[in-house]
Length: 216
Image (cartoon, rainbow, N blue to C red; front, side, top):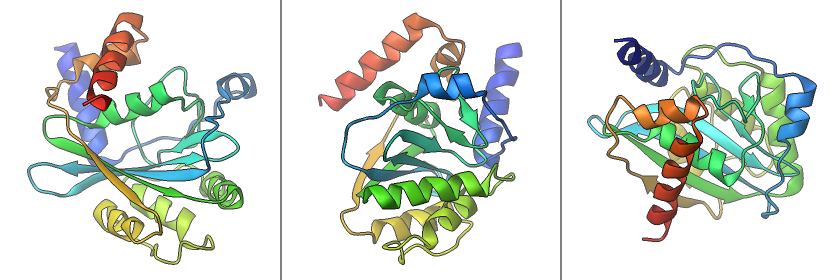
């Protein structure tokens, strides 16, 4: 019963884009610092209902001098990815996959759209995200569109409350790529709960599954 209630709370949090302010200590943020070594880019993640096609949530990965994940009003959490007001640090490839896996379920797909940016653009987007602060409930697309719309080169982004509209705006950006993640995991997401509890066996299982998927 306790697990059922936890899972129900996670699902409701996903649909409502609920979040609370958090501020990780300096030592945790410094320890989690991660540089991917890839060219600078930003990646929009849009959670979409398979049943209705409605957008459930938006998140933005910013890969610049450091790779971070801006997850306004989100519910995703990992102990190795400390958070400061919706900005998560330590976004390694494994953490990126965990984030996708957390949201992709039987009834939810995850759309991934990536665009190249300059280092200056990446820094400005991150600064805007830090300035915005913790987003209120249901403000996920609102926050990300606000963070992006005034950045030079992002004139295609308009202010919106809709994750689906934000995804359509993002698709108009030069060089935008598109990928959809499907997952037939049941809604109880027990595997995700195990990862949240830092079970190393679960982490290995989920990582292997993603490696096999990428190899297809």
